[in-house]
Amino acid sequence: MDNEPKSNDTHSIQSDKECLEKECVQRECLERKCVQRECLEKECVQRECLEKECVQRECLEKERVQRECIEKECVQRECLEKECVQNECIGSDTQYNYCRPSSTASPNILKGLSNEQQLQMIFDAADDLIAIIDMDHRIVRINAPMARRLGCTPEEASGKFCYEIVHNMTSPPDFCPHAKLILSGTKEIAEGFEDNLGGNLRITVTPIEDENGKIIGSVHVARDINQAKQMEEAVALSEKTFSMLFEENRDAILWADTQGYIIKCNGAAAKLFDCSREELLGIHQTSLHPPDKKKRYRELFIQNIKAKKHLNVEVEIITGKGMIRYVNLISTIIEVDGKEINQGIFVDITDDKRAQEDLTREMAVNRALADIASTLTPPCHEAAEDAPWCRGSRQTRRQPCLCSMFL
Image (cartoon, rainbow, N blue to C red; front, side):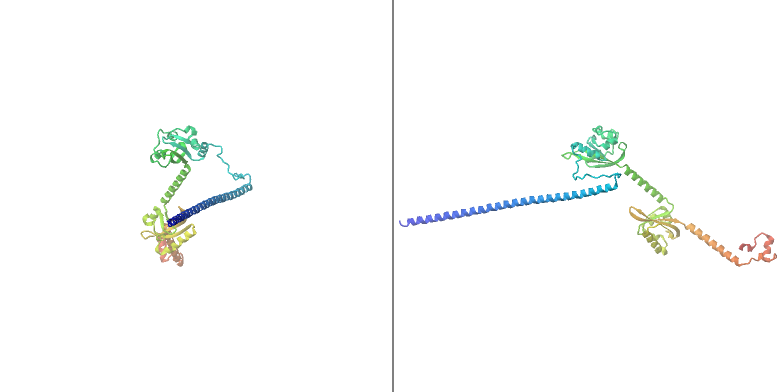
């Protein structure tokens, strides 16, 4: 009986101890939650600080950009002020003498205009002839320059078939780039002559698509290329004239690059050198001359290339059959496609040279005979009439006295 209270006390002590342990665990859990809450609050504070720093950084970046813009505007203002000062110095009679407003704000030239008016203003400002055409070849809109070429107003052209008002036809022509665009679905470019639009044109048509990517028409841009065509024709005529003069020239003409290799020749050159053009092309210019004089002509060629002067000199050439001919070489430096070319014109003077040599040789013989005659004393003019060597000549009168040959 005495032991029963003790067991109850022990049990109560254990239960108290368990309660204390539970309280400790709960306290630890609360402390952990407090710590976690504090960490979350710190993270929120840090996040807010980072966001503030980002905002500050963005503000600083905007301030920097604004500062740069202000500096650029200041530089532009200084440039404009300098231009104004220069214009004032030039004088009031200068054609383009004007100063821009001191205000840095650009005036809104489209202010007060509707989107339609703004589009039409930009549309009409272009120099090209512009039209918007639907899939049925009907004109939706044209700009003012194209209307002037057609002799109508944009309103009058709207709704009409392009091939009727432009080409005076009842159906699209074969070369119609808009018709090709309908088939290909891509941009098309064409060139042609159209009298109603003022002559030669380069036409570009670009597809117009709706929000689903379906082609609903095209932008038709025609650019006047009359001047370019005239220049092309002038260049073609010049090239044709040059080719005719080059090919039909009676004198041999050869082109050599700056290294001395033949790159072009005419028919007269092949005839002069007694070989084909293919045999001349690609060989070095020294191969045109006798072997013992190649060094001299190579030095002459190099000097002419460096000096870039007109050269007129008599040279010797060797033909494909090994014959030596004399030519008068006229060498000049020309520029073709941005490259320096040595043009040589070879005038054959072989016949004149040989005729001159024959004449010189004959004159030398005559001078030699004259010199011999001057050393002799003709007896028939100093001797008596009965001189034996002259008597026959005086008596017969058939042949002149031998001595008269030396007079």
